[in-house]
Image: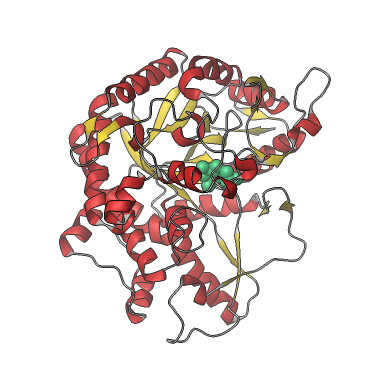
Length: 463
Ligand code: BG6
């Protein structure tokens, strides 16, 4: 038997743009715009317009989540739905009423809302006008939006998050072309990373003013990908050290410790690409660490030395210091192309305990995306997703080892409750405990939902 602490929270995570559908939404985010202009870049040409129809179907969806034992739901408020005018942060009444209904429906079912304010969904107008997260003006507009959220819903919502995976905004929009506007520009990516850290800290500061209740908390959600070196060779070790700084410490350190990692700042300064900051901004970051950390974990980062040593003639990109390493024998989720390595969760737990003053944290996403799950439907129409149960069991065992060693992990939120639309892959890979038959919009519990319910009821599972 593997058991978890008494008040451990069993939840699920999702996001507004991936579930709601675009009904009555006054503005486009970058993905809405990208889909409208280049639908061929999305799996099967499927965009976010309908998603899982949560906007209309939330009562029924929340009933299903309750049946799956979900005690907390991490989702997001869409900037493009709540706000009418981004400069003044004036409100869209339909958006205000919608999130009120959803929050009340969650609370009525005993599902605690964990609300996140940004899940890759920058309003496209703010990219067009200001260059999006390249601009500190956009940082201030985001804080205005956040303030509206705290004022409107802070009476009922106690758990808040500034950003989901800000590192993916940097990677997706500014380095690797996964997300619109598909810019590839290392120095801009560095400034965007700084601006996102600043936006998070300013939002924390606003929260302290508007939600001073002692049972209210604010955090950030980071995708932590521990960097493991390909070998003991000093060149591989150095590559892994930089990868760790760039991929993890870049957001973890300012959010929890209040300052950027010195080694990274030194490197970026030497390379002439350090961000533009002011002493007042750095003081604000130092004064506003988060209360709680959400950790999204899917896969580790295997790293080796780059093929050629960095030279000043190359355009600056973080990848001049490291290269992916396809470790022979690693276990893969072939459909998603991600390595499955549960042990990293024990390492993450230890790292947070030892280096981040054992801050309260929880798994804010972990899950397995599988293609063509109709293959696993039984005669009763239930997906027999034993692979997903095995995946969760292995990760929970690794997490339990970290908790037994003293790490302050307080919950596990699976990605996701109901199969949802995904950024680049639309509905190709399914992650839900609940199947969404998108053509008929029928939603049914998978085998993993029954397993999760049992886990949530008993706080333990059989190995
Ligand atoms: C996380 C994101 O990175 O991974 C989610 O926060 C995303 O929004 C999830 O859906 C799974 O990744 P993907 O690309 O397979 O949907």
